[in-house]
Length: 102
Image (cartoon, one colour):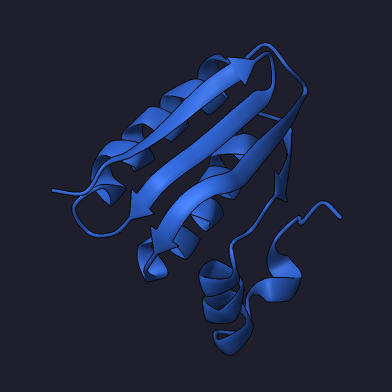
């Protein structure tokens, strides 16, 4: 079974790590939604540097976290997007929708 996590390292600083696939997606989806809803920060930053490998599930998670943040009235930025996730987003025409931090 794959290992993955989403944690809040400090207020507003979320980190996504591990292998993002069909076995880890549902749990990450629930955990991320809870973290975003309960955060006291107006601006959230999601660091993806620790993502080891991702299927299209990773991109689906990012889109879901964006919706969660918008619903909670928070701004979300994404940093450290791995090449495999960037390629999936590019091919699917979603790259320009992601709030990527330079």
